[in-house]
Amino acid sequence: MLSIENKVVVITGGSSGIGRALAAAALEHGAKVAVCGRDLEKLQGNFTPTASLLCFKADVVNEADCKAFIAAVVQKWGGVDVLVNNAGISMRALFQDVDLAVIKELMDVNFWGTVYCTRYALPSVLERKGVVAGVSSVAGYRGLPGRTGYSASKFAMQGFLEALRTELLYSGAHVMWVSPGFTASNIRNVARSSDGSAQAETPLDEQKLMTAEECAHIILKGIEKRKRTIVMTRQGKLAVWMNKLFPGITDRLVYKHFLNEPDSPLKKYH
Image (cartoon, rainbow, N blue to C red; front, side):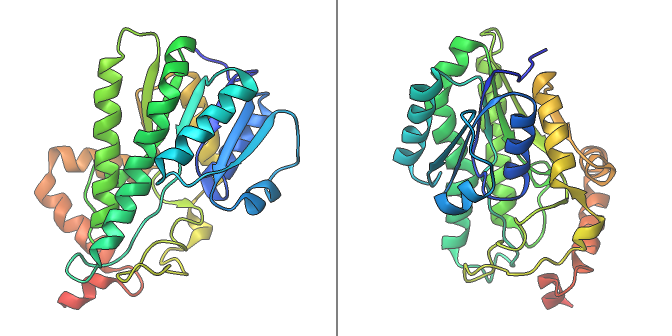
């Protein structure tokens, strides 16, 4: 079991939602925390300045930014014990309507951002026998209608991390991913529409969802216990289980679920 107290924890996408909650929780547990985001002023405004915190301006779609972020962490604290690839964006649009640049953007952020940061943090994680984690989604197990680019990016993330975990099986380092399910966060408000603009509002009742703080607690406990994977929420576990055993039935259930969303793009077919 790995205690994160006094460990160096690196988190991408710390400006809001799960990333912000993860950073705050890790600091409370005595970790040294480095977070990155595209808006440095917003990022710094989320936290009380402390010697245990590093805020860094970086866009994970840019390989040079990822390299510079990890280098800054190593320069400040000597290495990386835990990397949490959290930065991500979503979408809601039918594939036939979406600008393909939207799908490319999702792959750049969700998949390539994970690859870049992991590549540059890995030597230090190996040396310290630490943990690489990815914040994925149930969409990484089960393709979701209206979210083709998001599902593709999360499938790719999980495939990458699973292959890497197997490569490092006897290295002493650990690789894992977590799938929060529907969590109250900013990701749906900034989800891309068909033309790439921000969705601006969520189709879900955020009051009924798991909070980002609850999600962060589960993720940190999973990292400390070196879990293989974590699928959160009863609905998420059921979706993954049903899709393995009854894929045809799950197709219809998933379709019906997303058809009933407010302003569902699937209503185009009805």
